[in-house]
Length: 350
Image (cartoon, rainbow, N blue to C red; front, side, top):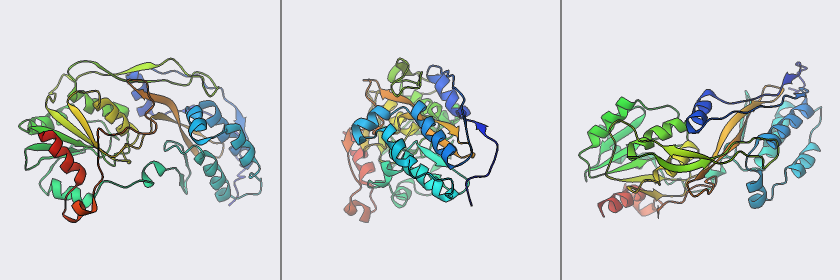
């Protein structure tokens, strides 16, 4: 199948998902004005369109050049030689994926009807540090489920909540029911291992249960020009306490390399509470809010557009180190024990 479908040229447009717009408005508002440019629907046109989208709107070029030596102009020159009007759709997809793969960014993707280009090295190159088999031993069969959260009281009177996704918001009434149920507990574990993100508003909503006053938790910027370093001033990210039931006891947040994007942000928020410790492996990062665009052939493009920082203005794109580092050991696994959960329980008792 050839990529030259001879469809009419389409407008190159930058757009965001509604949930991301809501998240941006929540944080501090966002407006952008994108120039439109036409590219032909052929291999050369789609290549140029993708390179240009990234060149004008991707937010981590300076970091990628410093850490990986990525020169985006050199990348254009090198991959341009691989584009040929006679190449197949599969060949074009492979070349374009390799090009954007130079950035090694989990939020940079190329989506088609037949495949999904991605870089998941942020989790695939590291130990999993999470096991469904072990988790079932802690949750048992009578655990509770509400708003996608799984929870129970462990046998040492420590509450356990597993949050596997921020894809959907939480019902405030559901969250209150969960915390009322866990109220007799001496401490709480919130497990966000293998949570690859979702909506920032959902992460903020859960974090709001652990703050008694409006708290600065970080900063973010957005691109305000086409240059690689054209950014707005830093805008504050703040967590406002919920008016509903709040938690006032100690908390351990469990993390691994598959804790990414909005879950990475949740960890950043929670570390600003004096009641919270983090236990496990470094998070996977993903501190660039992703936007989407489209190539002339209809393929979807996702990329990091708005960089986010912790409250000391350090980027968390490369992840957040835990307060207490731990891996699931082979010995504990053989005994049916989760090393990270057990360390968290020990620390909370201290």
